[in-house]
Length: 437
Ligand SMILES: Cc1cc2nc3c(=O)[nH]c(=O)nc-3n(C[C@H](O)[C@H](O)[C@H](O)COP(=O)(O)OP(=O)(O)OC[C@H]3O[C@@H](n4cnc5c(N)ncnc54)[C@H](O)[C@@H]3O)c2cc1C
Image (cartoon, rainbow, N blue to C red; front, side, top):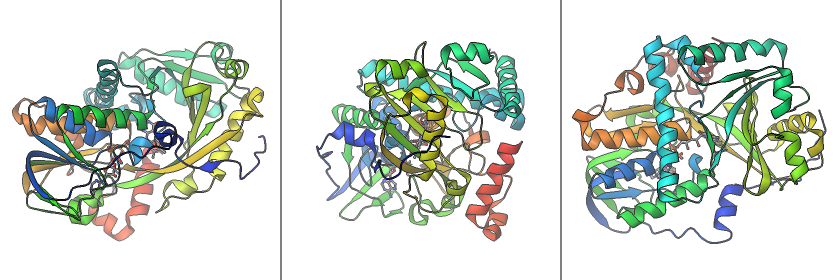
């Protein structure tokens, strides 16, 4: 592995910096008591998609966001827009029967379509790139993961191609790579830019958006902020790091996984060709703490990954050693980029549930309030926001997915056992069991 000099990168979300380029995002916070038909709390991908569905269904909509739309996970992501997020087809077929696995796989797939369709329909500028996915094995013992995933995709009739070492070399000649699995249907996006485009679209369509407006608590159907309140017939809560004051028991149901991203300076043509001689791909490897990377705006490379040590930390850890490991790995596979500098890096906590499938459900005592929680992936978040909005507008015509997304589904570690083990350990054990299966 090549040694990386420390202290070169700055800790900053490059996506946000690049989009805003020194401009302020222009907040307007809630200063009065208002009422509306539908209230969305949280302006990440889930909340923005909920608001879009509601306004397009003719509802009066208000959205309250703590910081700025896209200010949390949704605006920090690596922008891998693929039906696979934490869950690929082989993982799903181990947990569910064939029909259910297909239904669940279809949810993030639909989420990808929702996002891609918005980008095309509204001509959003968000570095939208068609990039096939490439799953790579760099260890003999991991090749079975490639075969397993190919088998699961074949059984579900999903397009894919296994690549042996020689075939892989032609499209992605990493020195240590042994096998690959390529499949279509995935895209790269600048997720911060997408959130800001969505915000502008919603404002144009008539949604009243208040940024810098954290909901402190909910009384009945009224959300209270520091300087005002919003009363609504229907409330859709799509916040991260849910606190008891607005989540009650639901706040037990999620934890987070920490991941890191870094972005390089622009590459020249030859450097980029040395990694992708036959066109762009979005790549990740078969390791548990998988590395992921893809080309982005201005011919830069975005690299991401996490480590077992930092994934379950309670708070973000802003230190570059984890991401430096992945940068070093990439450089040792592609020596032509050994002198390319990585300029920015950042960390983020992705909200997750114990089984890595989100919760999209009603408040048990009040069906006019719904929650989307632990949406691990842009795709799941888009789908869950849209799904809850459809349920608010037209519950009878919305397919009920409580079996998969309901808060009361069975988890390997129950809430009772979790209260003894603690959240961190319960989530760690649940995920470990899941990945080792
Ligand atoms: C570093 C990183 C890289 C990632 N890379 C990828 C990737 O490549 N591909 C992928 O699919 N996914 C990726 N993810 C995951 C993905 O970004 C998230 O799963 C997804 O964006 C979650 O969207 P969300 O709308 O549910 O949550 P969020 O984006 O977290 O939105 C929740 C919003 O609620 C607001 N909020 C919180 N509390 C309150 C309150 N009390 N009142 C009002 N507002 C509140 C927050 O400020 C926030 O804006 C990544 C995540 C991170 C952190």
